[in-house]
Length: 105
Image 1: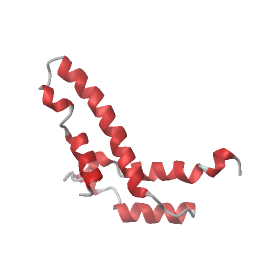
Image 2: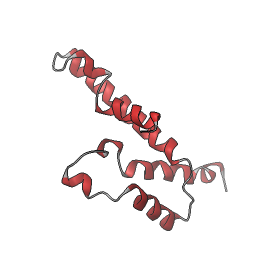
Image 3: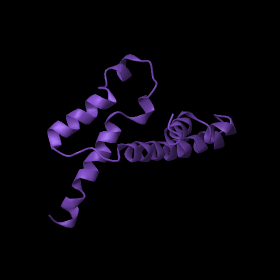
């Protein structure tokens, strides 16, 4: 295996962590309910790839962090435009979700 091939399971695992997007956790809408459960997603990944799922917590936190960074950037622009109050920049759904994951809740 070349260097790129050795990292392939990790790349695929990042995709699995994003299949059930952090933004959908806790949502009570029909679209969110149609997503497979976390355990079903992991099992399907194992079956299809043959790779063991390790360090999923890390990848979930990493995905939530990336989502929070994107949301902060968007919200900063909306705050600057006067469309939202300043507290939304750092206290929003994405940052609260990230905090819950980091705290293990």
